[in-house]
Image 1 (cartoon, one colour):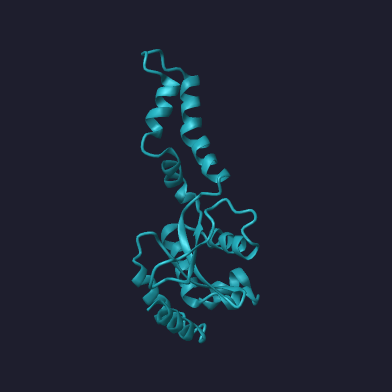
Image 2 (image 1 turned 180 degrees about the horizontal axis):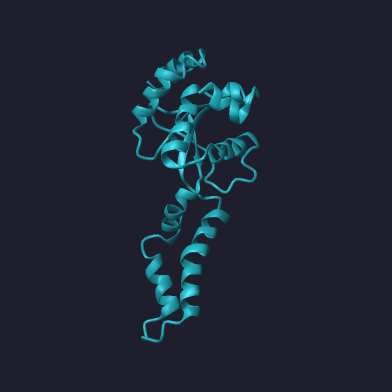
Length: 191
C-alpha cells in the first residue's frame, strides 16, 4: 500500500495524513469497482482547498456514535451518474418530463422530441445536481485534527457505522498513534 500511495502522493506531507487502510480501500475501489484513485484524490483536493470548486455534496460531520466527530466527503465517479440522475428526477420526474415533452394527446413521437426527452432526462437532470454542488457517490472518512485532515478509510452508504468504526480502530491507530486517545476521549464525551 505504501508503494500505491507513493505512486499518487509521493513523499508529500499529505501522504503522511493518509492511513494504510485508506489506500487499501482506494486500491480495492479502483480494481474491483472501477472508481479511480484520481476520483478519490479529487475529493481530497476539494477538502484540502476548502471545497471552493466542488460539485459534490459538501463534507458532513457524523452526528451519532460511534462515528460522531469524524467527517465524510462524497467521492464522485462516472459510475455514480445513473444514481445522481435518478436522485435529480425524484419519484415522479420521469413521468412529468415525458408528459411535458411527448404530451398526452397521442401526437407523433418525432426525432426532435426524442432528443429533447433525452436531454431533459439525462443532461439537464445531471447538470441540476452538479450546479447545486449535490453530486453524490461513496465516501472518504476522515478526522479533522489540529487543523489538518487525516484520511482514515473509505466507506459506502450501506456500511454500518459500527463496521466503519471497528475498521478504523483496528487498522488506523498504527498509522496515527494519537488516534487511540482521540477515539477514547470522543467515546467518553458521548456518555
